[in-house]
Length: 316
Length: 131
Image (spheres, rainbow over the protein chains, first blue to last red):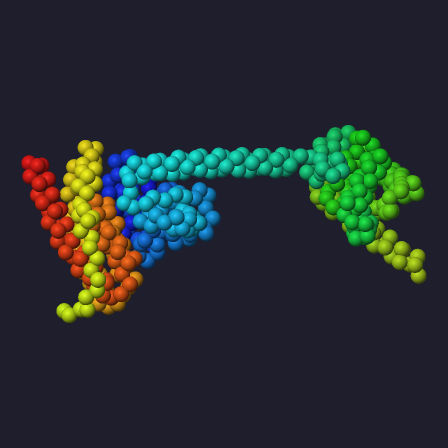
């Protein structure tokens, strides 16, 4: 193991160096506290250090104290070397952050076993660190996989309807079928009215409930073969294949009726209402869905404005 | 120099050198020249430190005097130079006046003469043995 020695007395320094090398360690030698502190903070610093207590510039205890103030993954194991064998000095040293101490002139057998103990702890610590890193990587990998999976998912978690991605994936297929069978479709853009007020008045959990209930009504109103999706927030987009322009009003009316019935029988503190924009899609239409959705969105917006004005007029 | 004589303590009862400490470095697995090397480092370093202590004492730099006495204590202890270690410990902790410190420093210098002689003899003996 690489071990740092910080000792200003050249005799002690030499004895320590020779001893540690003899025991198979690699030795980094420093002659004062500042040098030791800087070396121990550098990248790939030794993980075990033997620090003399009394050194010019910065003493060993101060080095311990400063090192302990820094947050590191695997802290360095610090052995204080001291001629001060008084109990209070030992306590002060350990309180300063040293892991162990040796009194000078040191007994070589004692040095050997204390270094051994340090090596053991450093190795355990580094194994633990590696294990923690492995676990962190595994967790990150799992999160990445989940994120990838979420990006692949076609349905909306909250309502179980198709999501934005699900809509486009399936709509393309439905459009191909419609073109082939020369069937017209209808695209409906539906936007909830007053979700903000519901959130503001009753909180977001009630707001979420309103979204879920709306989704449920949409599911009930449309056919199994219709593509009902939630684009996010309070916006829904529905593609109904095999619907002629003349039938659009019937569908819209059915939806309105279902909403009214819900509001009459519901025990929830809110009323559900949707602004709708419905556009017919001819089977020969070559426009993209993005463009057709934009048209439906504008139609919905116009309706929303009209409904708002009508509501305001009703209050006058 | 005419210094008012402080009470001179007697450290003669402490052996100058515990030779077994030096011998303990004669480990066949260790560098064969380690003892020679340590002796050479010690003699050079202690000469330097004693000079420093002398000038710091004159300059009343007490903390530096204590620091360097501490270092001599450590290195002497490492080589089994018991009396030198004890004298420097006394200078580090027990010298409360300029006078007692000056007397102790003189004693350390005298002891260093003896230690130097012993260690140099040891060096010679070892170098002869090596051939």
